Image 1 (cartoon, one colour):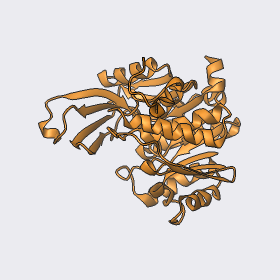
Image 2: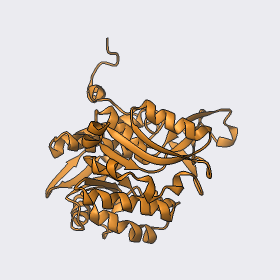
Image 3: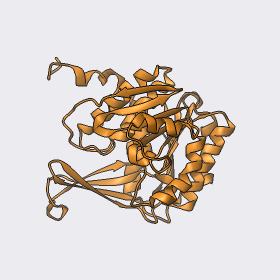
Length: 319
């Protein structure tokens, strides 16, 4: 256990139960729902684990069947799970409606959830101190004051123990307004080493730019030495230790884009911890993001290292 933590990633946040309509069309006409789980931080942890990186997830779930499902699935993916069962609040719920063949609607039922009751005392110092990297997102600080303090506490521990900090802005407009998000997330951004942001997320903190590389440079001026601007179907632009880099997306038939950004982050961090050059980090990132889009579900389609070349092979059937 200790050996895994010394070489791995620690992350914390809310993982929810996920209900997905199994038929395209309005949710009110869906005859059945698939049951699964999803959460930005645990999605990244699973992406890392499949790429060979030890990962620890810290979070709270309710004392209910959905909470049991979350813990079982994360353990089945070989994560070190620090799951606190909270008998005073339910497990959060996410619902997906495939309204058309090309569009998804997602609703969250997480107000007052067990995950929102995360607090600093839930974060073991020894886990953070023993990790190679701490990964946090901007979702968890939006859930509650105690969850925000838990993230800041974890970042403070990482800084104290010389642990690299990765931060994905992951702005959720339904959780809080842009001005409030920028105010409450600025200290995390300034204290991180690796930053991930979409264009609109970047513009919460710096003026708008036509060139994503200019956005990355403006964000790097705030503190992080590695800035990656996620561009979705257009790939990404990055400034890594002063080096500008651009990568196109890997073309795939998109079935479900939810979770692609988390897969991207997991791919990048896996190569960072492996000591790979920035070009390889971004190549694996866009590849992992593409894999996530090909399968219904937030994380089920994430690749192993042996599968990273699969999207480039010419034959449809491997024999």
